[in-house]
Amino acid sequence: VAETIPKGVKAYVEKITLNGKPYSSRCRISFDDLFPGAPGKTTEVVLTLTADADAVNNCGAGGAADLPLSLSTGGWRQTERLEVETCYSGLRKFWDWIIYIIFIA
Image 1 (cartoon, rainbow, N blue to C red):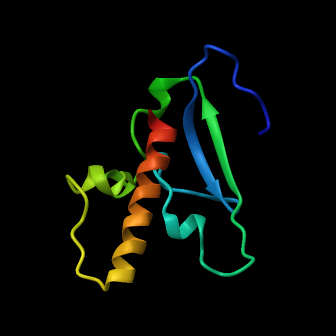
Image 2 (image 1 turned 120 degrees about the horizontal axis):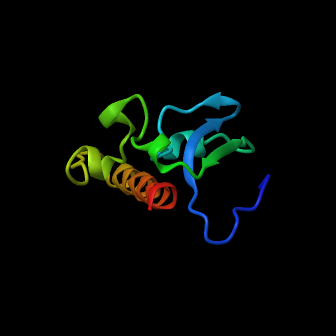
Image 3 (image 1 turned 90 degrees about the vertical axis):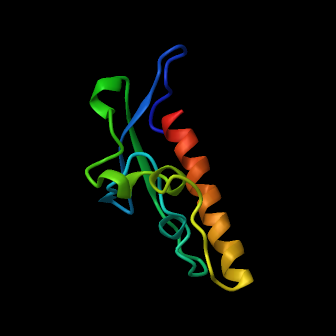
């Protein structure tokens, strides 16, 4: 944390960078991007915040692609994967939703 948000001030996510590269969405971060699956591999996440709510009135340039899956599809996606894959997919959607709540709510 580079700075502490003053008490009583609302903070909004202005931009996200992962490993030094700009991320398209301000509303969600993909589970796969956060946890790339390689043992010992780390991901650097930088959230740049702003107090200007009008400056961050959308989720990013990607439109619906930048929304959490639960919002962009009108509900959780149905999957026809193997049971293990379904569990992994559900965990990814869970993290997308939690991250959305943290960034937007």
